[in-house]
Image (cartoon, rainbow, N blue to C red; front, side):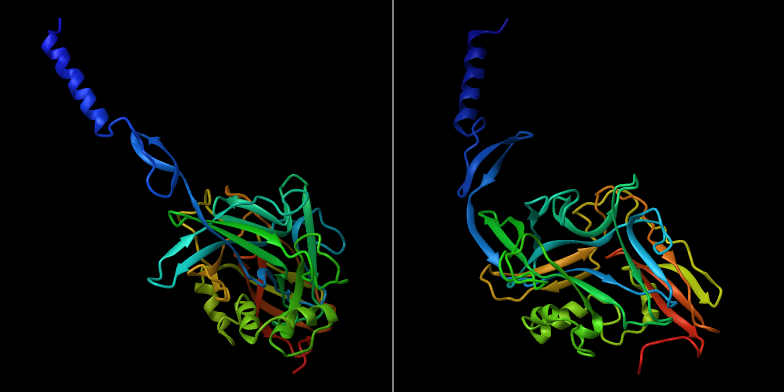
Length: 376
């Protein structure tokens, strides 16, 4: 049985602990709501101190390469296959995040993604993959017969980069919310007026994407339509160079294709060959990751700074990583069918999988003289 003196002593100790803040959890400056987590007082909601719109002109969401053989077809998305399109179960698009780099010390802070979808239907133009990353999908498949597919044909036996295309989101907007603790949240949307560039200049009903040949971007040939020309007229030379840098052979310009084998962005698949009457190619099955994607170990495959013409005190950097529409990675298989109709033509190439966009890249080796190729 406790003595009165011991009871009084325990009460005094409890009251002292309470007076010293042992049982209270006061919100610090800039905190709207505080509470205890695992016995520790923590701020659970910080005050918003700044909301700004970043004047971002574009987001690169795909680079599509052409296969060897002038009757070749590549397919991305979900397709049972047909006389034209080979069967496929894959994804086409890009997964990225917004990172803010301090102008003072170079430290970086990734922004959480606020919105999960920018359009009707699943998965929609913009889809959350992890809390800090989203993807834009141009074609996709879920392995159960649901999805869409895009097919890409070749007109030359050894096209090089002449028929490669960069797809650009031309009307994005990005709103950045910063709280008292410096945490940032990115909210994506689209410009509703004047940002579509195709085919009629009316209000945009959602995100718009333009497929632009690399030779148009580098000035080798003029745009093939008025609307692409209108979009390109909004860009500076530096912005054109930024878009081109997403194509591996323009990063840096005239890059040696032999360096692709050691680039983590590319997965070597093996050799391919096409000749009159036949062809061979490697398996295109690949898996974006061994388990689950997370924000703690974000694999940066490409990054580009946005124009520093806004006042957030930081530089906005768009970082692209391996493409997957889900955090739990599933096996993917782009469709491939190689063929040529050119007599006596034979072409060999090394085939790579571009993990950033889910597309197949062919690096030609030997090319017979009779094969068609870009004009000099």
